[in-house]
Image (cartoon, helix red, strand yellow):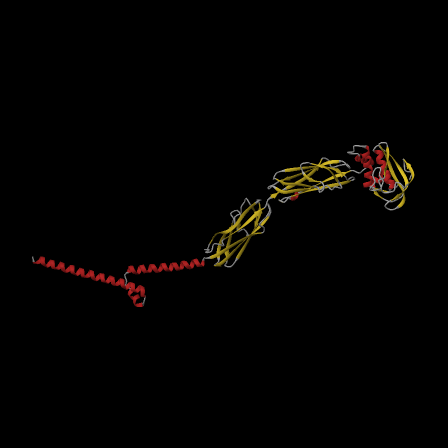
Length: 461
């Protein structure tokens, strides 16, 4: 019984001692917490000494926080050292280039810093449907297939210029070319100037060709022939305001007629076509009379348009036509072309000699009919020889007259020779020395006061 009481007393004592120890431990922990807070806020040397008395776990937490701060500071310094502002600009040598023409594109890249750049890639792709790469000056650092231009060791404040030559492959279109930042070993905090765009407007384009032809290239004097002119537009666009200068010197080619459905003006030899679609062909037929002889004559036609023509090698066409020398017989035959009466044929003879033989002063016969025709000049006697010869070859009776006549313009009397032609039962005077004279009409001398010295079938002098 006594032993049991003793044991109960011992147990009570142990419980009391444990309780006191627990209270004491709680107070110590609270004090440590307070000291830690004070050290954190004050940071003096005494508090640092107290801080060293903290538990091992508290030391570990504080050390980790300090390392995180230091790492963040190092990371911020690295970002600043790896930062650069890259500015890109672009321009073209021509913003309205024509189809198949070359354009030089210039891309300028500047490093505004603050740091150097070890590597930089610029994207400058080519649209293969609009442009064709020809050459560049990037020394192999531009790949025109991928459109990437590589720049290495790009110092702060430096600029690099890149030129690329491209050929225009499109027409009647507006499109954009873009140069932009692709990638690099740095951070660019200002991206608004990392690209550059320009617009190009390509006008319409056409390829006009013109040709001319005739059935024969050896054409006799006063004979007619058809000249065929053909214009084609090989495209790719419709050609606007197309016109053709058909040449046709009116002193060589006498206009007779032309295609009635074509806007052609003989006085100017201009043919207005208007618009001509890609792949279309249009033709003009002109009937002309050859007014040249004893020569090789040419004719050149030219086609024009308001639409850009990228190939002008066929915009002009030239032909050569040979005309034979005149003989008395061939000329008489030519002068009868298209005549409906013998009277008109005689008129043609007198008018032709009047208009084509230049008067030359000398006495008596010098060239004769054939020589006068060859030289196209002669005095009154030789001019009469040619009229008489042409009339007789044409089936007319003809003769010479000789007299002394008073010439109105010079107001002098001269010995003079002229011809006369028998047409439809009547003799008509045929003096081809005056530019106003015609068959049966003489105006260069006074027919009411002349003295007739003789009428001859063959001129005696």
